[in-house]
Image 1 (cartoon, rainbow, N blue to C red):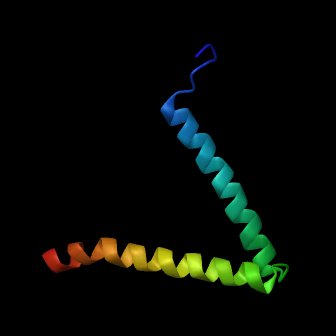
Image 2 (image 1 turned 135 degrees about the horizontal axis):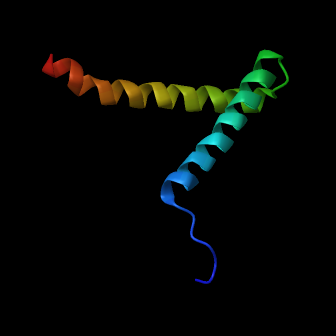
Length: 65
């Protein structure tokens, strides 16, 4: 490799910034009603899967309490 090596933290920060901008655009377009029904369905599925994943991760915490 002859190129410059980007530190891991910098690469993660850059990726998160890109993801945050994309999420903002999606939220803005969604609020304005500009998403196609297919895109809306995809977003709903992703949100549902994310909520299920979060609930799964917090379930052991609740059982321990």
